[in-house]
Image 1: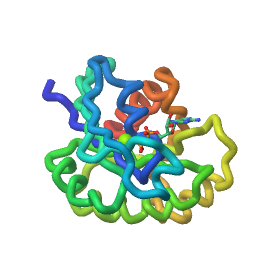
Image 2 (image 1 turned 30 degrees about the vertical axis):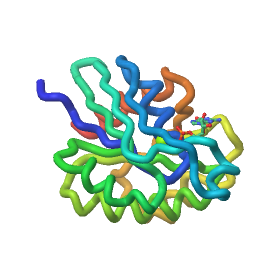
Image 3 (image 1 turned 180 degrees about the vertical axis):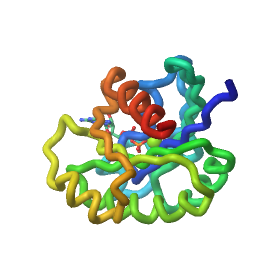
Amino acid sequence: MEPFKLVITGAFNTGKSTFIRSLSDINAVNTDKATSSPDEQRIKANTTVAMDYGRVRLDDYTLQLFGTPGQTRFDFMRDILAKNMDGFLVLVDLSQPATIDEAATILAQFRDHGEVPYAVVANKSDLNTVISQTDLRQQLNLSPEIHIYLCTATDKNSVREVVRRFLRDAHK
Ligand SMILES: Nc1nc2c(ncn2[C@@H]2O[C@H](COP(=O)(O)OP(=O)(O)O)[C@@H](O)[C@H]2O)c(=O)[nH]1
Ligand SMILES: [Mg+2]
């Protein structure tokens, strides 16, 4: 079977690079550089500037994983990475409401790339959440058939389970 091209997107610091690192069978390719703005430096020292890349065999699938940069100034990379994708996951952090506004923008951008399966991943489920899944669904204006999966990207099993469920739900 052809590899399934899965794009992992979402706002700055939602856990995209971690998600790919946890899932990939190969050493994930990472393009993190030192963060440049003081606002970002307060949050983390490094940030993805071009892409993350990983690859994984999962059940009957071979997945190629592409992670996008989070900051809006790298928006153009999202369009490049979205070309010919077979599906995408948008990560949000329910303890950081701003990541949801950003997810709405990203969803709009990715939907323009054609009809492929997608889902929302509520990452960092080990942290306190300030927003409920119901509010998340409402804020993103998600139709009922779009799934929201809870995830802890630092936990390999959690990430594998999310992707398994996504593939299963996408191919129903
Ligand atoms: N507590 C917790 N921290 C996480 C989780 N996923 C990622 N992180 C942390 O969040 C920070 C940002 O992760 P990173 O993968 O660089 O985010 P990216 O900007 O979306 O690529 C890092 O410090 C990660 O260790 C999670 O599920 N739980
Ligand atoms: Mg990153």
